[in-house]
Image (tube, rainbow, N blue to C red; front, side):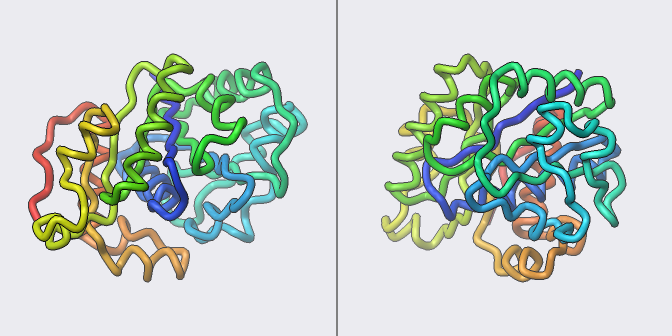
Length: 246
């Protein structure tokens, strides 16, 4: 059964977009057909992270309105088989809940196993529209108080939209700072956000290097953040895996 996952965060800079691209890539490499939707019209940079800026022509708004069939609108990744992208329009479109439902239904007809929506940071109005079609949610936070407070607010909004399964990813974790008491520990983040933990991603310079060149850290690296993204993808598939130790 097709899963529609909304990825959100309480503030910008948490690594939400890189997580969306990396987990989507890992799922595609497992043989799944994956559609990544850039729902962040303000920044719209998933095409850059995926190295697809010259390939993404049509937007999710085109597909949602039925202007362009999804089969034509979704751009295929040039390297990773089974990975597709719908980019965001330059401005937030005037879409209805019915438009989003039509898009969701078309993704099922096209045989996608996963639809991963990279939502905008914070609590803009369009986030509730995306939540209306999501079957699961991922809230991304960093282990600092401002990020965790924002994560809690986003989690409550997603719950209010009746997303039944919402889980937390703590990103850019620096165990040293946690030990020194500068950053919140993982248990604190889970307690404040009120969410089950899906994964922990360590701070990793390879993520920045790969994203800057449009390459997937999952494809080119085996350890660190790359392994954490793969583990998250496997947990989404229902596998039980221990958390990484740093």
